[in-house]
Amino acid sequence: MNSAAEPAPTYRTGFHIGGRWVSPLGTDEISVENPATEQVIGRVPAGTAADVDRAVAAARAAFPGWAALAPTERAAHLERLHRRLTARAGEIAHTVACELGTPLKIAARVQAGLPLTVLDSYVTLAASPPEEETVGNSLVVREPVGVVGAITPWNYPLHQVVAKVAPALAAGCTVVLKPAELTPLVAYLLFDAVDEAGLPPGVVNLVTGTGPVAGAALAAHPGVDMVSFTGSTATGTQISRLAADRIARVSLELGGKSANIIFEDADLAGAVKVGVGNAFLNSGQTCTAWTRMLVHRSRYDEAVDLAGKAAGGYRLGDPFDPATRLGPLVSAGQRERVRGYVERGLAEGARLVTGGLDAPVPDTGYFVAPTVLADVDPDSTVAQEEIFGPVLAVIPFDDDDHAVAIANNSKYGLAGAVWSGDQDRAVAVARRLRTGAVDVNGGAFNPLAPFGGYKQSGVGRELGAHGLAEFLEVKSIQR
Image (cartoon, rainbow, N blue to C red; front, side, top):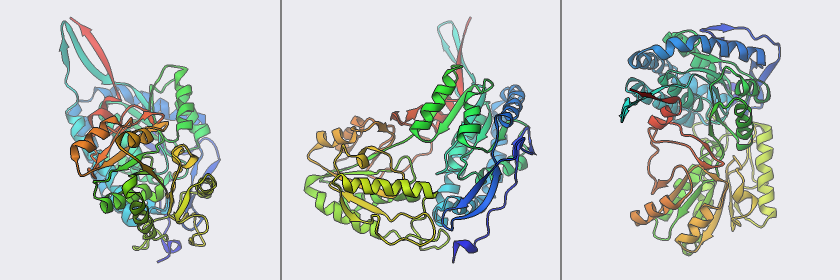
């Protein structure tokens, strides 16, 4: 099956503001490519500051009524949205496979399945918000922060939207969403579901556009009480500056360079297999990817060999071919960026185990071969900077302290992993890692656990009750 033969996603055009589809005020458009075919599959409006003004005004007008609803009523709205979005799961997976290049079977499980799981969790949390507290003569209550500007990335285009919109709505906030310009089409499916679910007009609004125009206007808007952003650390810094001018609350989920520590007593084959899979998920375009594999020196050569063989089993190709395990990168620019990192890593002394710039890839599409680099210096570029492609750096260590020192030698702190036959040892090392989440011996992802980072990986937390708390203000009433 050829991707070119797959029908392009169908979607509405314009913006969704105040409960209806409206035309943009400007005429500029953004072309959306299928990165596997390099063909344009759609166009969306490039929103202006005036378009953002309209959306913020709608959100502000809707806020008092939405905030005043009983928690159970907001939960009922979210439950209807969940049902309507679930009915579109196949269409969601197909759309993401087209606009991002995620292999269809992975898109169905992750790109469609995960946001539905997260949305369902907020149906429950919306119905049971944090209880009021009595502290001495004070009543402590929690209230919605107000209008939220949600600016989301291209790599998990529906999950990242739901991880912001669902808790914001559950908390009683209203939202203006600016999705990523590279993968905006799936957001239109969400807003069709919003219409079908009958959410009140203006509670959630959609404006597509570029980051420097629509994103900046949303982040700087005086009518926006909070900005929730996921993306690069550089852009997160700019958004923080824009929001700081009016002391608006900011929640940031940014970059990562996560370490996967494998001790000498670990199940080596299992740890390496899972580690490679984590590093290459979504073609390596994942902020939590374990892109640094740290292995005890006594098992290092064996691990490098296993990693090379595992990477060699990742077949590149058409996202709609069931045999494909690795799709393209999202754009030509992203492909060249990743290739540049591989070239620099080799120039700085890393050893190529498999993949690299000369490995065969499909003639059409923005593909980079799955690449494993060994003997990587912990201070080198490929060990320090987020590559956002299928590139794994393997690094030896001597003992527990050495492993922790290498893992913490990063400006990021988003995720990580520890593998050991001694569970207590693994947990003890996990506690020493300066990072927001650590998986021990393959611990399963928990959509109710707080997600977020230390250091330059961000500020605030998403998912579960902690994610809900980000959208609540705390008030003390003295009696």
